Amino acid sequence: MIHNWRTARQQILIILLGLAAFGPALKTGFLYDDHLLIESNPYIRSWSVKNVAHDFSSGIFNDHGHLNYLRPLQTFTTRLEYGLWGLRPFGYHLTNLLLHLGNALLLREFVLIIGFSPAVALITACLFVVHPMTVEPMLMVSGRGELLGFFFTLVCLLFLLRGTRKGLFLGLAAYSVGLLSKESAIMTPVFFALSLYLKDSPSRRYRALVPLCALTLPYLWLRSHAVGNLLPGIDPAIYLRFGWMAFPKVLGTYARLILVPWNLHTDRMLPPGYFWVLYTTGLAALICWTAMRRSRWPVFCLLWYIAALLPKIPLMCLESFMCEHWVYPALLGALLPAAILIAKGLTTPSRAARFFSHALFYVLLAVWGSIAQLNVFWRGTDEKLYRSAVRYTPSIIMKENLASVLLNQGRAGEAIPWLESILRQDPDNLPAARALAAARQIVNSTSPLRK
Image 1: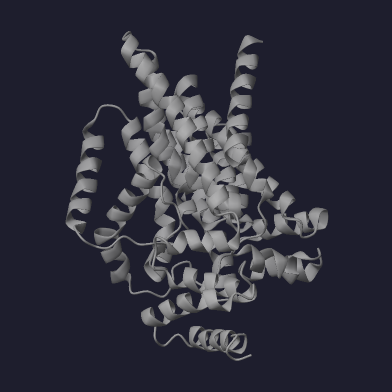
Image 2 (image 1 turned 30 degrees about the vertical axis):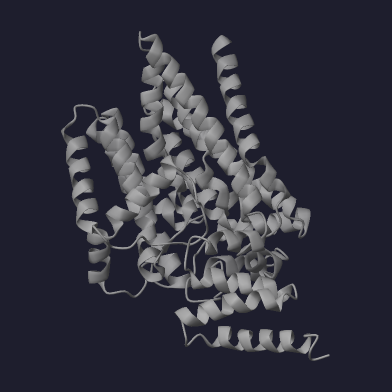
């Protein structure tokens, strides 16, 4: 009874922290890709056979643009919400928030089942639930795929780690749903293998990887049939060069943002390739250091962190940017070491060490939670979202989006500098040139001198 009450209190604490950090996002409207995936998406308007079949035979963006993704479950959930809420954003954001809270609760259970103490599990879940890197899927309903994919990844792992036939069956079912939520769920077998390694499980437990990998094959076929190859048509040498020269720096950039989540913005450009040798050498040294340690948890954390970001490489190569929400499933690999160190400090005989560990934990919760709230405020509309991005990135897409918002609001004069900036970066950008001509015509026609 005491154990159940302690568990319930910890779960309530996790939920309250998540609500405090991201509850303000419930007041947000539809942003960015939401306009395409929800507001103007005819396929979520009804449960007709044609619409449901379309979910499995076409990408989520309905062939708009050259990038597409097979995520039927995300479309299923938005179609269900459209029936409940229409085009009122509150219900859609509530679903995303509940998914994030559910992931935090599942993460606590997962950390427990792989052998860590209740204190480590609680600290990990608390840090995870308030972390500002989650702000994008809280602001943009279209970021739900990351939340759904990680939810079913954790469910799958919790079932598989039971080591029973029923657990295997339910785990495979969860993995199937996870694959239909987001492509990054394809790393679930890797996460399962890492979990078995951490627990020092007998070799027979690894047999469950066979049906997991076998289940991946029909998914790859379905995805290829619906939206094309999993990897874009890029020379394999480019992937190798990226993995050797750029990916270590990407890992370092994400690690820095996790530790100090400041200046967050949408569509962060890839870091320049200066000093890539230092990052690659540093990553190799870190891998060697963790491999030589007697403890298994550093290897688990580092490989989890790397594996969670591997599915993002094709898009990084193709588009040269990195989204903040991509790090969502990798947060465990970065936050678990911090939780282990804090929990160790809480049990040390040194009073100063205990005080420092308590202070560090509470400061992280307060600072990260505050940054999350501030980002909801700073980026809570389309204009704010794009303005926050163009402060820190030369992304043409963000400038185009900002100029489009300003033009649609009748603020042609404010749009002109952004359109001119786009054309300086890309002189052959015909849509921007046409928009600039139209904006200048509007300004000239409304000028007092013209009147």
